[in-house]
Amino acid sequence: MKIGEIVSNKILQGEYLQVQFYAPEICGIAAPGQFVHVKIARLRDRLLRRPFSICDVSEDGLLTVVYKVVGSGTEVLASLEPGTVCDLLGPLGKPFSLPADHELPIIVAGGYGAAATLLLAKRSPLKGVMLLGARSKEDLILTDVFANAGFTVKTATDDGSCGLHGRVTALLPETLAAHRDQKIKFYGCGPTPMLLALAKILQDKGYHNGELSLDHLMCCGVGACFACVVKVKADNADGWRYARTCKEGPVFRVNEVYLGDNDG
Ligand SMILES: Cc1cc2nc3c(=O)[nH]c(=O)nc-3n(C[C@H](O)[C@H](O)[C@H](O)COP(=O)(O)OP(=O)(O)OC[C@H]3O[C@@H](n4cnc5c(N)ncnc54)[C@H](O)[C@@H]3O)c2cc1C
Ligand code: FES
Image (tube, rainbow, N blue to C red):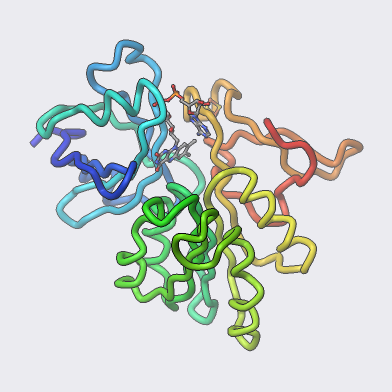
């Protein structure tokens, strides 16, 4: 088998697909929250790679990515058959730090944020709570996998088709009340508005022990082009500075997240 060779590429659920690459070197060193930069075979603008979170890795060198078709790159990726070889760069980016043995992880995720936090859930010493939000029931992915990893899964949907009818952050108060005697570490990954709402709640309530993955459009993926910047808090007159999500992130501490206008 060749490095980067697609071993399987199929529908996971609803609009989400799951691709597995043979990538033993990356699997051996990948940490939760990191990503691979994929040069998608047969894509016309092949120079531009596409970033995808590492969802899972196996001992026999299979790297799993969960993705949704949103444009030309992911459309071509979805059409690739097993045996096709893609060039993978990675693992890239600053990972989540694992919770300490006594810390209960509470993960708040939306969209492919579930995929980006699965390795974290699997490697957490204490199994905690996964709060997963989506537009509708069919967009709630990997719930059984998180449950099998020992996490309690609570869901929220915009249309009320599964779990709480509303935003995923609305699940926080009862979850916090249920674990008020435990030391909690928060993690978040998902759409930017969800992450900013989560960061505001955590910062306002003084829950500083947490990390959020701020994904942004990327180009080089290795810190050279500044295409991927977001504003993070800084001790200067503006109160913020630009940080490259591919190099200084995508994972940032809750306290670093800048809550003003943050479109990068
Ligand atoms: C660190 C990181 C990890 C990611 N992990 C995953 C993952 O696990 N699964 C997954 O499905 N996607 C993930 N993405 C997003 C993924 O990279 C894009 O969906 C993909 O590059 C789109 O390529 P495309 O050619 O199909 O679409 P394009 O034609 O490039 O874009 C189509 C549309 O998607 C929007 N878009 C593209 N990238 C992003 C982004 N990063 N954030 C918000 N909107 C975007 C564009 O603005 C445009 O509207 C990740 C992005 C980053 C930065
Ligand atoms: S994508 Fe080039 S610096 Fe981040």
